[in-house]
Length: 360
Image 1 (cartoon, helix red, strand yellow):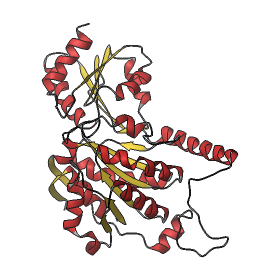
Image 2 (cartoon, rainbow, N blue to C red):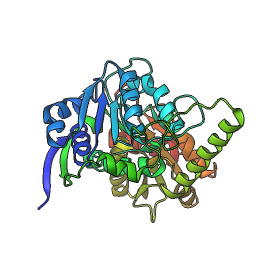
Image 3 (cartoon, rainbow, N blue to C red):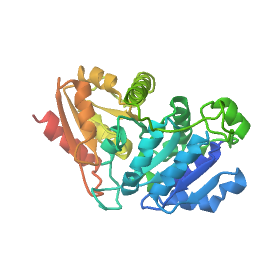
Image 4 (tube, rainbow, N blue to C red):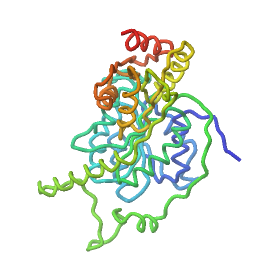
């Protein structure tokens, strides 16, 4: 029998962390993601599975605790919202440079600066282009439902350990705060230290000094060795780009116009697409699920079919740069966005499509 529960997106993420057998969550409260920690504290997963839940002294403390746990081969995760993620950037770069797996949830709010506690998608650049210092990449998943907030925790850890790379779930205040029915998976056991030692030969597991000791670091003072390490990272990213692209298309088979949107914007665009179809406008929707790696190939394919593309985001226009790369500027690509927590209606999106793409 399916186990169903009505949950907020943040709560679904937290419950998923327990059920996938995560070892540790370290975080610090910030709106609109504070329910993650509140749910974990209330559920007491240290009694259910042995999972550690700790409120750190700051976001800096949280990400460095994740760094330490990840170095031991543990399934470690954190969550925050835009300004908090900014504070974590140095630690995220260290984790990526050390090739360690972890999961990071960003429930995006409006900025820049302290901005607003209302939803936004303005951290796209920060997530997909690195964010911190150095030539590194995060695998970035963009959930658009509460169910995906649950499901992407398992997927995120799978990808993180497969590639020894941090994974970020780029959500927003809409998906984090809204409530939907969620189908819950069965409880998975946490790995023992012996299993970790056998599965992850890179992990530091308390071995005594000697030839078997494992050292985790992102520091290399020899420039030739540092270049070699960077080339290794770039080769890994190329493998990710070749193998891990995920997206969803809706009614694109006969589409003459295309909406491209991720997360909560994709939900709005789905209704806008239905309204357009009802008016006789053949509209399709492309929803990138992985923002890195970005689905350039399907954008290129659809740009050979449609007359124009409207990119819809809750920001000033960030993903549109990747859409333009994918379309090779063959056709008109325009942007429609709202700021400061303002959420467009499906009617507004359709109106923007008609004015900016069809009307011209």
